Image (cartoon, rainbow, N blue to C red; front, top):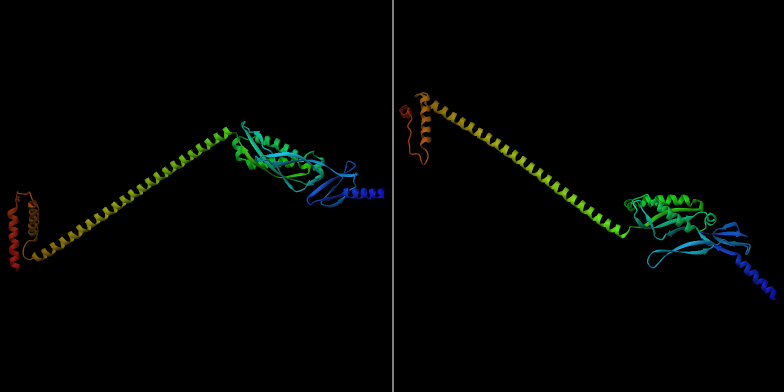
Length: 323
């Protein structure tokens, strides 16, 4: 009975030990007598204990420390995760083309497409990807100046992803994305960059202020110019209108005088000589203008005053005759 029970226990242990349950999006490498036999996908599987064993692989993991930095450690596992994985590389120092040492840490998103190649083509896949990323990143940054490095993240990411994808293709890995998290220059370089940035901002502010003052002066000058032009145009139009008004007034006055003279001539043409009458009237007007004024105390008598007076006397006689 003891022997039977022992055999039953061994059979149960043998059966239980051969049961392998692989979870979704995981695969397992099975070796028979030390040689690759098959790949187990997700589901229930049974292997022959002692003859077939899962292949144990060394895998490098990363974790965040209390200081926020990434730290690496090694584990042993028999199942390969086929999901997309993210690997956070520890911060490393690289040198730019202009000999500036900067600290960079990167994130890589990759996915295992062939579990067999990931196990047999490379010893430790995460570590191999990390070392390849570090050397490739040094080469890329070494071709760029510091200023180019700080503004060319997308270009660096694209180059790094292309190189890693081509190199890791034989490992059965697909590199989907690479991201540079931080690019940290030395402290003195940061201070110089801040001073340079401040000086650049001050220069731009001065340029913008000067351009504003320039545009303001130009607009002011143009406004004054237009105002003067409009003022001159207005004065011109006013002078033209005044001249036209004076001319029209003189014409009306002349027409009125001509009409008055014409009526006077018509009234006296049958009773005397009109020309003498007109001369007498003009002389009287002239004499009136000569004696006008507050300080005029001298009375001028023209040489032909007797003729004028005789003309006035003739007018009086004509008027009396008309009456």
